[in-house]
Length: 341
Image (cartoon, rainbow, N blue to C red; front, side):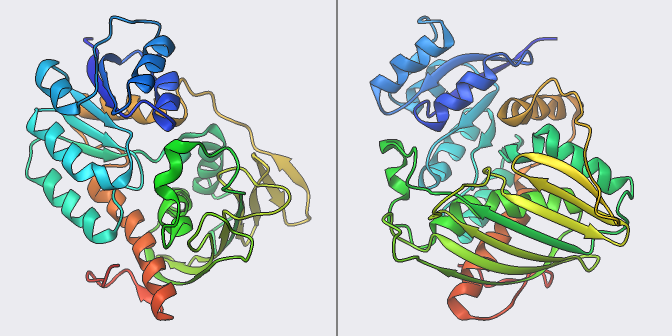
């Protein structure tokens, strides 16, 4: 079957990480790259091992001169409206990095842009596609612990580590933790629990030692359909041992618990015995899974797992958390209307 032709916009920083993962995906062919810095383009061509891949300092030139099926937009959130519209105008499907926008209102606008074209727009949520998360979801769906009633989730990272100049756009954002990192965890909650958010109460804050500005820590209490209660704490101004980027979590039911600790998923029996879950074999994981799953969905005429309209629900949780932290009020997410930040 013919491979889907891809143009990637943004190949520095995390964009380089994307290229290193997706270059071996058999369902696609990278036909052009674009970035605003020549040095990023040069490094990307070396990474791909092909100096003949067209490289552009302007995405407009890339979209105009190279025929492609799919645009990967690995750029900061403020750029994604224009890039998405330009890619759709050029006749391409689109995958954007998460979060899909800077604010919930912008996300709504982006969804409306996507609806006005006959192409598919999806949001990357690569945390879903780790074998460890597949193992946890499979265990939940099998009824291993009964109905999931309580979730405890803790994320701790020092955000000042390993951050190059490509991340400076994040500096001094008002809510960097909630708007940049919590989207991963909120989306994973929806995915693992197969449930939708009902309400959320949150409080964000800034530690005295946080040098990057903004509220880099937050607590939240979430209720999901089916009655699952989630207690969430996250910080990107950690001191001491960091968790993985997924964080550590426990999902508790009548028959026991499922734990994800330091990157390993476990089944914990009622008697307290802890057994590692068996990990499935997956051809692709992470962003390479995101891309291949998208291609397979488009070929089959179905929506990808994280199509933009569905991912708006995950992003609404981010907006609700910001709003709740500012107002001190519980925010409902099941009423069909929500005063977004």
